[in-house]
Amino acid sequence: MHRSLRTVSGIAAFAGLAALMIVEAVPVARAQGAAAAATKRNYKDNGEYDLFSKAFTDAQNPAAQIKDLETWAQKYPDSDYKDVRTGMLVQAYNSLTPPQPAKVLDLASQLLTKDLKTVFDDPQQGKRLTLSFLYATSVAVGAVGSAAVPSPAPAQVELWRTAAKSLKEEAKAYFVAANKPAGASDADWAKAHATYDAVANHALLVLLIFPAEAAMAKSPRVPAECRDIAEPAYRRALTEFPEQTYVSYVLAQALQCQQKEFPAKVFQAVYEYERAAVVDPNLGGAQPDATKVPAYADKAYVNIHGSPDGLDDLKVQVKLSALPPDGFTFKTAREIADEQQAKFKESNPELAMWMDIRANLTDPAVPNYFEEQLKDVEGPTLKGTVVDGACRGKEITVAFPMPGQSGALTPEVRLKFTDPTPIAGKPTPNVEITFQKAVATAFTKDPFMLTMEVKKADVEGLKTTPCVPAATKKATPPAPPPAKK
Image (cartoon, rainbow, N blue to C red; front, side, top):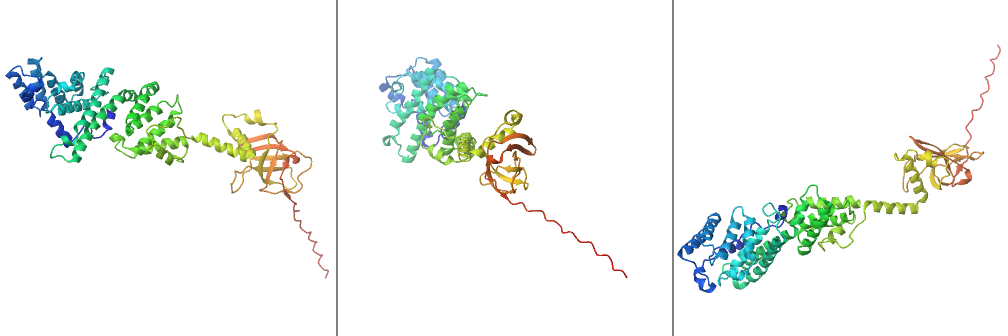
């Protein structure tokens, strides 16, 4: 689940005044001797004080300091400063390279069940020490769900959530003008406060989503876990942290994971993909290529909708809320095609009927459509355009052009008239006719041609022109016989 840890920039590596604050807070008992009376604590003897002094001196070397502190704990397990010593160990394990978050959280949990005001009760440094302790704890919480801290118990999660919330509260109380060092600017002071807030927020976010991250890391993903574990966790996270586009993106994946069982959730998935793409396509640092998420989000929309129509409106909508409204959807390409087909049938019923017949005649799935459903059956009313017909003939060919179609027409129906008398003239081409009660009698697929028989009385709009008689050659008279000489 460590992919989530890379989504909040500036958490793992803090700088500037924030780092200075931590360094200043590490020497837990710098003034401890002077404050002993105030805290009602005392060293057992000079040996204990020497061990503390050694640990304090090694504060910039975490590995050495840990050895010092462990030696102190072994020799003086019941020290008045054992809680303070635990706090120093928390700092030291967090300062190792790499840190040891599991050890940090184990030690921190020993103090989190206590009143930190009594643990860090030094009148001069108590608040700073409390803040630093909570900071180190919250940084370690960022590893929850990873191999280092894979599956904490619910009680631990609640304890660490309390620590992260306390960090926010303590930081708000500490980073005020009265506590600002003389050499620090207002901007630096505000940045330090923001860093502590970011650490706390990141810890809270991780604690919300680490079960979801574990479910989504499976390959293949389990739709039931996407539904019951990942989706609810990501939704809660977006409610608390709506600016986190990484969560929008993984929520979209969790929704998409369920689309076979719940097809409607794919629309919500597209919403979340677009939300991530529009608000922060880098996903807080998880995706370094800012073009990939928008490209994927737009493609997902077009694949479902059939075109980019309406996409700009959706991009405006996703900025307004981290989660889609109830019942969010948009028209699919199939729905749009069905609507267009319905409009086409309404305005061109005869042509639509012919298109259905032609589609069935050419559909490999119904190879016997003509023989079983069309042959010798009186057909519906159809409308087409005359292509050709012989003068005084008994048949014409008909095409069925689409509205607005131009160019040469391809005949698709041969109409044979059953009347005893032929057509009186030559059929005029490119004239629209309507015919009904025509009976299909023959069909060929290649070239496509449906033969139908009909009475002339059942054909409307047929026009003819007079037949022009064929020109005849005048007989050439024989040449006269040659004159006699």
